[in-house]
Every structure is written in C-alpha cells, then in structure tokens.
Length: 238
Image (tube, rainbow, N blue to C red):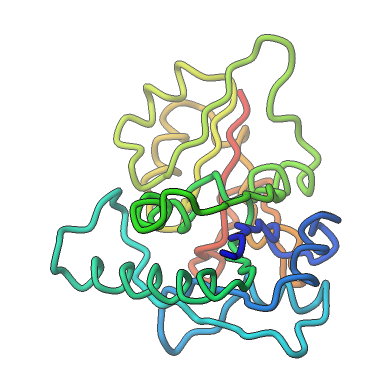
C-alpha cells in the first residue's frame, strides 16, 4: 500500500505557531523531507519542527536544490536533475508504504518550494495521496507582530515578491495595502519610491517575524544594511 505525502507548513519561525494538525502529522510520519537551498546550509523548517515535536527515530531526507524564480526547469539542466532526484527519493519511501512529511516554511501554498515538485510527483504516480497542511504565513505573522491590520471593509490587498515590483508606483496606486516579500534585495529602490510618493511613514519593515532575533522597524529609514535579511518583508498601508 502506497504511503501518503503530507505537505506541512511549519509557520514562519515560532514553533508555537505550528498547528495542532501539523504537529500530529510530524509525530506520526516515519520520514521527513526537508528542502534546502544550499548543501552546506541548515534547515530553518527542520529546526522549527524539532522545537515543536520530537523527531527521534525519524528518517530525515535533505532535498537540496537551488531556489530559482521559475515555474519550470528545462530537461537536462542541474535544476531539473535535482528536482528529479527529490521526486525519486520521496516516491521510494511512499511506494514502500511509508508516510512522508515534506515540510516548508510558512504556508505551503504561498511561494512554496513544494509546488515545483507537485506535478512531477503526480506524473510518476497519478493516484498518489497528497494532503496539504496549511501553516501560518510570514505575511500573517508579520502583521500580527507589528499589530497592524492588512485590510478592512472593502480595502484591496496585494502580496508581491519585491524583486518583481518593477511598477511599484502602480501597485501603490491600485491597492490600499501592499505586502512586499523578500524586500531585502531591493530595499534601497523601494525606499526611494516610497519617499517620492510620500509614503515612507506608512511602511513597516519586519525581519524574522516571531523568531528570537525578530526586528520591527516603524521608521524604515532606520534600517541598516545588516538588517536586510532573506526572512523579511515590508507592509505599506495607505
């Protein structure tokens, strides 16, 4: 009997934000697959899970593949091969009857690594049982930590990767609240546009929401280079 693949969102960093269902699944499965962007790096998702539940005796599979901004990997490329090896490894455990949890930071449906593999898994086994366990996203966690509403009544909200925000002024004009993901790479440019639009005082920059070294900047001009981090976002509320 083929095992079930559980895609588990472990939240943004605070292990207490792991849902009851996510914790139960992690306790019950025999194998956990952990995506990693660097072979030598550690897994934040795994460290969050380990603080919430005991992982003793479980097989931990480290799936290494670069986090590319693409929906597809061309056949024969390094990325294609790495995704293919991950699919093969996961299917081996599932076909042997083991249940597997693929863990991911935040929520699995928001810019998640897993969906790069979803279609490939179903191509190999169309009848594969996959259950997605939602998690608290960094968007929700950051707004909660900053004590700010993302939207009220008929206000419009946009969540976009900051690296793709070529028309930031257009987004600012069209939406009441703008959440810029991974803003660290383009922070200077965003700061410039917000200044031109008179919205610098409407922005909050949150780094590592819910983690022990969390930082919240209500004056984004106070942000230093050392505060620019992958696990960060900016909320602009008009």
